[in-house]
Image (cartoon, rainbow, N blue to C red; front, side, top):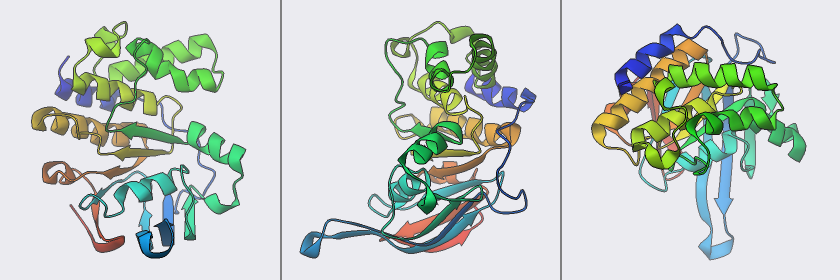
Length: 252
């Protein structure tokens, strides 16, 4: 099945993400005066300098900027992988500063899906087994897990590749498996860091179109870091970063 048909298949998915703990009228993500510095003294690197923005529910918002501009730092902080030095992050009505380590782990497992440039698939597992890993961690019953895996592989156009391992798949196919895995636990937020960085232009565009389609079909909100102008055009909104600050915020 082609990349494009996989994107079209997204529209057929009826199941949505977890119910929201916040107010449906509120933004999914609120970032206020975010500060993050790495190192100390003369070698300190100010990765973020008072960054503020909101991500409305159901939108795909892209972050663009040169390497070192702060894109990945923002994704790590919003995704609960790191903690800021100052400022506040609210995700689906939850203030991340108030969470302990176990609560952060549960947040990442149950409410956030991650897609990385390097795919991050487990080589010895099949495509279906890779997609099922997040649900195994949540101890989802086998039948429910298998049904969700089949649904998601169909969603990304890989129903016929369920038994293949990552090494037997193309780069575009591996990234589509990674997207399916990120959606396994019906997250409210999808975070993608340069998801097309290892793909050629045509495959990368198809993968970005797939992300656009699953945002619509699954009702998920997405925050995506990319530098590709063609991919940025598919976003609802683009935030441009430079030296740890947002220098532009507008429609793609």
